[in-house]
Length: 121
Image (cartoon, rainbow, N blue to C red; front, side, top):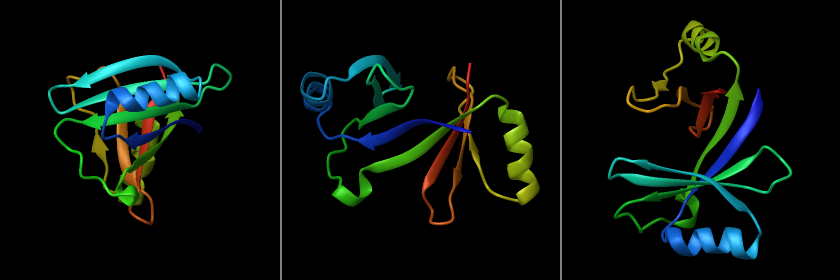
């Protein structure tokens, strides 16, 4: 597996994008709206493949510093093979919604943190 991105929740999307792009020099490489629920902005440094995903949940701004962390994400070549392994272990998982273009699952690590496993296109 190869780490794909790190997601953090943000209270103010414009201010956050400005900080990461103008101050830290990251480039916005993608933006996706999840219905009326959320906006995801993907940022990269131009050197590595690792991305930072800024997630703005519409109408939610009461995050504590401890609950802003979202999940770790990993790319795999064959998601179905990973799903088989997860099922063999008897672990619960959540699949991507059919209307989305991405294929992924979420599982929990032993501490309860979300781990996203995405099929690389």
